Length: 232
View (cartoon, rainbow, N blue to C red):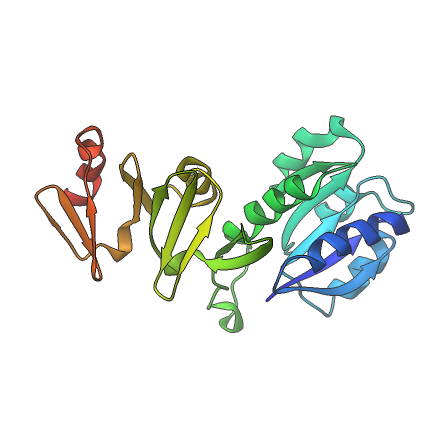
């Protein structure tokens, strides 16, 4: 479950963001905050995984609020002002959404946020176990949250891509290259024009074949060099 906070002085912005989040599984709104001071008070005694943060607010601006927050969670900036984008990335925000934004762009931002580790300066004993990293994918007119660690490999199948996990096979209407953009480079490796594998799930490599659980994945001639990082 990904808990989140909306910080924006516009009621319509709250409605749009919550409406988009309601289309996704495992997203839980903790509080509507209409200025940064209200959010600061809430975060003094509560924790969330993700903040949707407006910049131009009364009393305390969005980035000023972010700078005084001791250990900020992941942050997606939602604003009508593109000139502040550079400062946002200097503050390690996960993404920068320009209003008005589409659901597709919103979904990409959420994927970017929940797929990357939270950057904190202090790690307590109660926080030693991190939340599973996951992505949202669209399949059969719904969005499914998939844990990245459970993905064994992905396979191109015509105009579709199959995502094979330890529990199921999910088919989506996307290219393999697009799915790979959502996955961490250090954990996945393209080994064929139609296949990419999760390195940690590789059981063995024999000749031009990779074995993962009961599956056999071919190795393309043009991709053999990619295996050097594993074999060495």
